[in-house]
Image 1 (cartoon, rainbow, N blue to C red):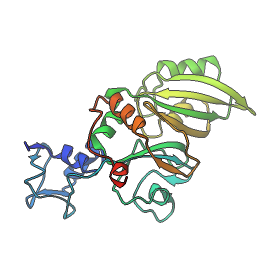
Image 2: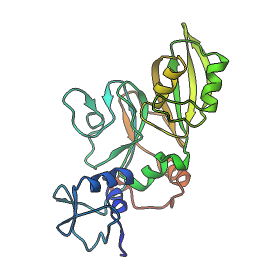
Image 3: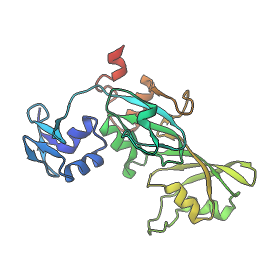
Length: 253
């Protein structure tokens, strides 16, 4: 096998997206044949001894794709936490998986768990422009000026100007309203920051879609493996081969 970028090997081994794997390398936690790795390094996963925190990585493992309906007050991480429940508490699978596009503690809805680092990178990197759809309950009914601000892009407190957002009012609820919002980027707490900037406090926030993957057939706090059709749709949207390695579910029969 020819040498590959180290972050690509780590991502394929289920250690996170390529960006996350670059962070692991930069932190000095990765070694290749006993030497601390550096960004830009290449390796042969079949020949070289590649380790994270001293543990040799498994470079070939079945792919896992899991849909989770995250409740409020659950952290979007597979790591244990002393104060809050995490996705690991909801999805106690043996495979090492990570969330694609985290939701903050108060937010709810669709989270994709996988060990397919290449797919994760394609789905979440802004340059690919994959849509993420949300239902957002705001405390006031927005006026046309506020809706136009979303559609043209909003300058956040740090000076970043958001990409245009598709937004529509679905229905009123009390003094507020449910909005349907579609983003093509995913900065940390972006929807909450945008809504705050235009004077619309967020009461609830639920993600319902990532690319072609829609939240369905999963109760709040539940999870399931993706169907073959859902996996193919995700990989097609990401521009990846439709027939990759065998999934964990297929291996288990």
